[in-house]
Image (tube, rainbow, N blue to C red; front, side, top):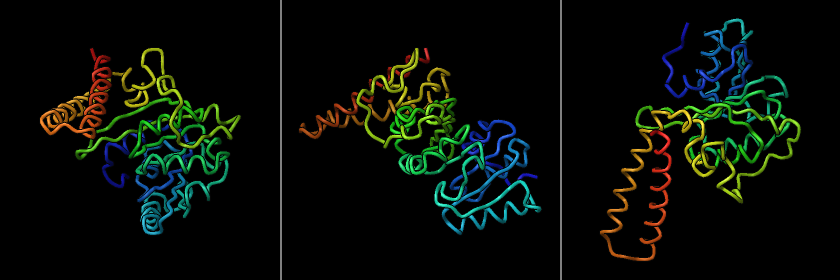
Length: 258
């Protein structure tokens, strides 16, 4: 039984789950991701949590339909990780929230965060800053997906708190890196580009990211043309400088598709 056809962004999350995992979906909304993972035999069990009673009640009803005995799918009212015990699940899912909010959940209880074997995170805002936070916190990025759906782009990141497991106190606040050029560097992708667009996506020559880059490039060109045609001012010069820098980064990223 399938509850419904899942959006692509949720399918991307399920596609990153390790077979046989025991997952906790924080901010589960209606619970479709965790329930589907159990029904497909990917997850052994799912703990669905939400801070809001309304969505959690919907998740409870969906869980009851999918698992009448209540043996594989549990629901719980919880603010972040507050009502999840250490090692109660080995995989954490957080999606549909802004990057700073996900960061806050991860840093609030570092011992619990460090207990997960893998985490699948889909921040909705400040994604370059969120990638920087992961790197600074000692998390290892294992995979990324970039999804276009209903006119919007979604980023999904699979990560493991490898370094944090031994030193959870290293989880930092989301602050600007002292050296942005090195923070996300790989053998081929410089740190600034990796942070902005995702090293794995660039290495993979992800086609959705390529589409996104060309769209961003077109927007930059339009804005620059308007700024150049307008009355010169200090604010216009500053805006043009920022757009010019963004354009250079986009062109550098597109070089990896050649």
